[in-house]
Image (cartoon, rainbow, N blue to C red; front, side):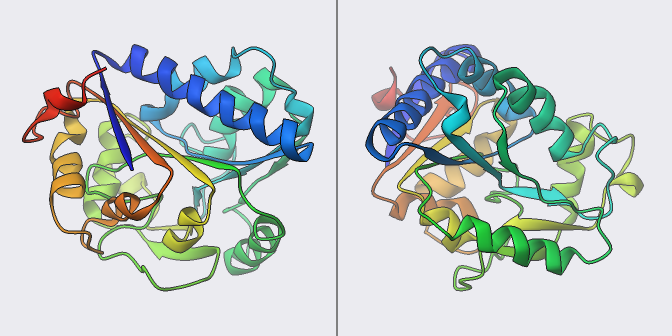
Length: 251
């Protein structure tokens, strides 16, 4: 694992996008296509903005999966991750190859199995992830399941996770936030050849400290990223502010 700290979330997003774009170009050059996993949420906006402007990516050769999606939320809802990806990635790049987790279908288990089968059909070249305010990775809230080999799970969302969604402005109050989601499993995320974690803002500082300086534990799910040989965690001064020696990582 490598850690990089930047002055602000804009420069963080640009640097992370440069690494992500290089990974996509390399996969296309080596295999004729790139298979990627994309995170959503407020923390990823600057990163995806920069990535969609990157030069020399043939998006017609990029196959896109997403990390997670709420159960029972229509694609028209502002918080829908399918809506987010359509507007912030797919429509901007014109990529025709994407696989949505439709959490509004009657049987989310079947959705998880169907998209999971496509996900595991070939290796993932690069996964873009974040870290939640409670330390979650995708929607794997603590204590996360570090053992299951299922590519996607049906998970219950804890209250701190749901409150984060309200705090970010996606829902008006806690009662509107779904209680379940489809989430990529921890082990599946770790199977990506490369992981780029984009984690800006001071509100993530406590989670960052717990995940990077505490034990690798299911109680701090994103701590598992420290075990991946090719993971890079991008922070800004705010999210790195509680680390014991954040200055040593500054870029």
